[in-house]
Image 1 (cartoon, rainbow, N blue to C red):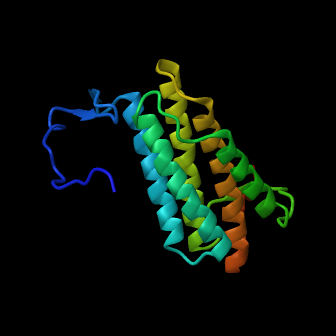
Image 2: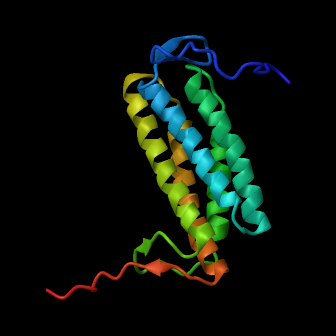
Length: 184
């Protein structure tokens, strides 16, 4: 194993700055830190999905995704580094197509819910969407590889489909938005 942290606190961030993977110091509220910090938050949200009862194929897929998100966080933390590739995006697309194949077509909007695992998956989806927005914001100021943005975009789509799968598997079913619930 590479570097080991022998001391968790360094006090180097007490001035509101943090170190990037290349040693550069930046403000803790910089677009780069916001992007990789939100990717880290998304990874934690997926961990919450994995703390629920999920099928083995979903567990294996989301565990792989967690590793890829950690890699993506590293890519965003080290300017010029590449860690997520087209093959990773394509793997998400294959998984998405596979899980979506058995679902009925959408006719209504779905509300977050449908059991604990599905609700957690919906939450993870929204955090990934925020990570995507933060990464797009970063890309307006600094170089960001397009694979990073595409990966986050596909991942949020995959999490939506997985939330549908989990809602149905739990027996709770999907929570459909009732657009005609109010009479004028």
